Image (cartoon, rainbow, N blue to C red; front, side):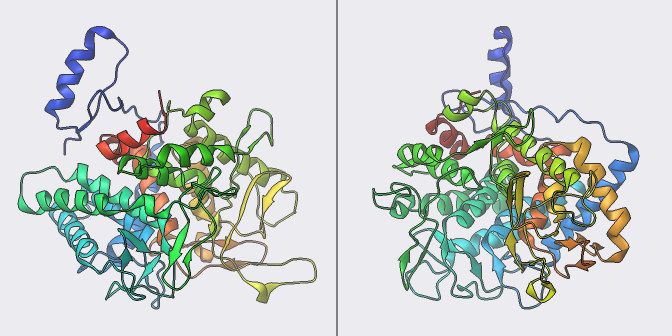
Length: 469
């Protein structure tokens, strides 16, 4: 199908023509908000790589199709039978279904119907301060019962998981642009869901490190968490979507966010704002094409967020090559630390301690958190747009070397493995499958970027937070 595209061009003689063309293809961008032009990632895959990537993407897509409830669109947090839904996984699932339609694995009509079911559920589910509601003040709980949609596991009302959900919702708002009742209702509900979120309600009191920032969560039993979104991490997209959808305190909160950035230079030429687990360098980029976009901090550093994530990816690979802790398997083709499952303390020895689920990460030797020898394929898979020349060979090598031992299954790569212990996870996690599937699509076609970067909410958010090309 034809993809709509916003246009930016530096040749003055073509500005008017391209502006007219962008209107003809239906892009909702306007020149007074932000200008964007998509360009493909410059990497030519071999035939062998293309075949592998297609298989990986297809099998990962099946997770979001088969591990979701077709009646309400809720996507499992993990593939285990007992698992509730993760709100963030739903946010990744909405564009995942569109990828399936674009690749011919399902029809557009199938993708649209499931998306409409999802948005109908989100809009009509209970929003109140009841302990078993689905959400409150436009936000949604971190985990929801797969059938009823009620709050699960006494979890928090999650501001960042709601942000990822809105990423999928805003993508749907732009992608489903046809004049039929299903797609028209998707667009209508997407705007209603977005505009209902009360971002200013979450602003923490003006004191201390987290004052004037968006709180990480809220519980009806105890109120807001004392922690807010500051410093570089996956919350970057939260501030963009909040700023674009009515958050009055966005500019003040974002300046507080930038205040706690930590720039490090773990290796020559790889200086970057650090966040040690790679997911923090990936999630925002699923939706926003940050190439050539800089806020005030990045303009001072002379790089954009895309380059920052590229350097973080390459620093992780370099760390695995150096392998300062001497874990089995770490090398130039087996690497990747991020939040994932792990073997757990039953494998502990006098020398080593092993975590279950943990935010493993590194930005280089001396900048490491919870490295227990556990590798997550989503670390390389979610970074394919940043460094395809190293990430794709890494994914292929890990499948070749460890696939038959337990790393590869029905939905592609399982969540994690530990070569030192010969341990393989049994589960697939939605928030780790999502970056693999969606970042591969951004590498191959730019699908998610092309649509989300034409969304007026996202464009307004970028403008309010001071992003310029």
